[in-house]
Figure 1: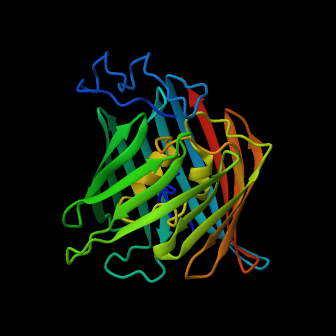
Figure 2: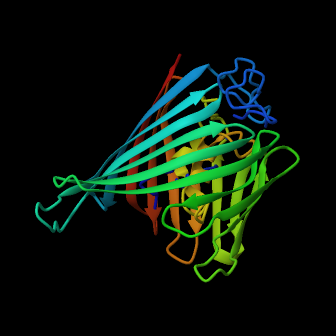
Length: 329
């Protein structure tokens, strides 16, 4: 099922994980001569994902979720998201969702919890993502906070390698990415080093056909994700990757780096994106296979409205209505 954070970010996750800038040298992030400075009006956009990029873009997103069982539909809450871009670079992201507490305990007994995920990205010769996940309980007002710092090395405008350090674990967890000659993502390797210090490298392979991602395979996890596309549809946004935002799932980017990679994918930093929009996605792993179907009712540069339905054993089990509004400054 979809994650309640990003995704999304998904899996930020990412996130297929994609508009990019070239990697700079030793200049500071605010140096006007540094091509990676997002405020630099001459900052180049990668040819991987050409398109119209505004000086400042904001995407405001509402996701209305429902559990589905036969003819019975039950409200599962509403999520909100916000993505801020400057010159094609994702600068800030925020996602908020609420969980009801079925069996409240304590005094006062908390009845719900707000989940707040925030990320800020800084661009120098690397991309540094500062990630904060906060749970706020009500009516008690207590909270729990987790933080992470993610560093990504960039080559030709694409994330190539890096690591993450999280507040609740020892050491850093590395990852590596490689690309095909046309700029599409080829392979991802990540290391979830065990508490006993043992290495555990997992590898995801990305297969492409006719300019679209057709399959993601992770043999050692026994996971395969397959995609079919609407050949007549294209993403109206030059910066935000709809495919990664709407169907991002944990099978794409596993491991401790997964959520931030998902975010970088949504923001267009993991290579050339697919030519068309996904209409159906099938996930097969050791559990129950499920299918995700995407239907668009509005597809413009100003607004996108889509319904994402999840099916298990040919029965709809979950539905999300996405409303994405883009403003330009």
